[in-house]
Structure formats: structure tokens, C-alpha cells
Length: 305
Ligand code: 13P
Ligand code: SF4
Image (cartoon, rainbow, N blue to C red):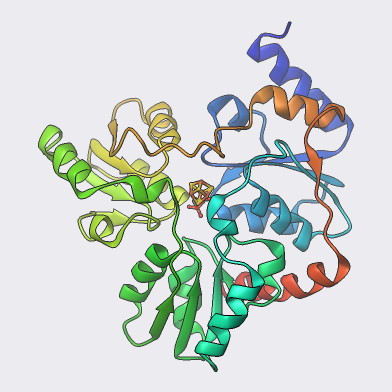
């Protein structure tokens, strides 16, 4: 039986021996952060994936993130540490539904949140993440944007670019949309001196109340650099824990006890070990035409982001 530290040491030894780069989304647990080469938000993970020089990349996160790595590095072996870790939002719209939406809004640029399947990305013009959406879509030539699938991130992005016209579909993150105005009232009452930081996947009425709206990395950076000492955090609750580790002199409170992504929580350190050993995980395989087509909208994101 392994203790956490000896398992981490073994993973670090194996990844060096096998030339593996471990990428971890910020919602992963602390023990996984400690064996990762890079930890960050979806945009940061895409950038790291594009420049990593190892032959194998192991993604600790959810499926669309591993697919993005494969699209960016088709020649590499890309592994997803837990095969069942998916993002429910990525399955909220399929290519048939998108085809109908495009017929309804001809001439609109289709902007896909990165939380979409590789297949759906083949039919989109540009990909965005929570940290890059405003910059990328502000610079887009087309003034009309069909934003899929997260209408909450879409609405927040639209509020920052009033000169553009947006239409949305009915998607959203089941984790962040659980946060309610009541949670905000309660947290403000309990911690009247705290600043409220939220992720733009929250409902518009929650983002409207926030002192800062940003991606997971954005929230962490802003809280670390702030002179303030108390923060209410409205994103997946792992970020509360990570911030508390990073800034022991400050206080971080979860906006909602229910803001937990069961998919992000699936991956364990043991899964990472099994994946490296070849006894677990899944190698991501995508058809050549999907790789080529989906790449265009991710490249547009990286060029403009
Ligand atoms: P970011 O990592 O871009 O902030 O997105 C959060 C998320 O929900 C990832 O699935
Ligand atoms: Fe998907 Fe939401 Fe979980 Fe992110 S937090 S992986 S958007 S369900």
C-alpha cells in the first residue's frame, strides 16, 4: 500500500522515465497539483499543451480538455486520467442542433466555449475560454455572435462588449448554476467585510453582485494579489482550499456548499498512477478530419487570445 508522498514520488519518477507531461486543471485536488508540470485554467492548459515538448501528455481534468490537447498535438499520445470524467455542458448541444441554430442565425460568427466536444468544434468559427472570451470576441470582425453552449458566460461576455450583438442557446454549467442569490445574501451577511469573487459560469444575477468576475486562474491571482484579507469564492469549492493553502494569512469562504463538480472530483492520485502504468485512463483518439477541422477554431483562439 502507498502513502500519498511515496505514491507522488513514484509518479514523479515514472513521468520522468517515460517523458510524460502532467497537466492539471485548477479544480483538481492538492495531491494532484503537486505532481503536475502545470496547473491552470482552460486557456492556460491549452497554451501549455501547445508548447509542451514531452511525447505523452496526461490530462487531469475532464474529457474536452484532453481532446483539446490532442487537437493541438495530434502526433502526441494524450491520456485522460479518468475515462468517465466528462463535462455535462460539453454534451448539451450536438452538431444537428447547431446546424439548426446556424440556419436560424445566418451570417453570425459561431463562438464555442472550449467546454464543447471536438466534433462540435469542427462546426464553429472560434473557441473561447472564460479568461479569453471578452478579448477574443471584442476583436472579432463579425458584429453578430452566436455563443454556445453556456448562456451565462455568454451573457457576462456580452455585457462587457455592448457594441456586439449576441444570441445564446440554453446551456450552462450544472455546478455553477446551483449558486443562488440567497447564497450571496447569506454569505454577505456572515462575512460583511469579504470581497465576492465569482466565475462567469454563474447566473447573471450572481455575477452582477460580484466584486470580481473571472476564470479560476483569474480568481486565484486576483485574490493572492489583493490587499484585502477576506474573500467569498463563487466557483468550484476546491479553489477555496487551494487559496487557503496559498495564502494562510487570508480567509476564504465558499459561496455555496453545493458548488462541487463531481466530474472534476473523479480523478484521484491513484488514477494518475494507473494511467502512467498503463492499467487505467484512456488514450484520446480522434478522426483525422475532426482533428483538422476542430484545430481551426482552437488556433483562432490561440492567435487572438
Ligand atoms: P476555467 O478553467 O477556464 O476557469 O473554466 C472553469 C471550468 O469550469 C472548466 O471546466
Ligand atoms: Fe463542466 Fe461545470 Fe464541471 Fe467545469 S465545473 S467541468 S463547466 S460541469
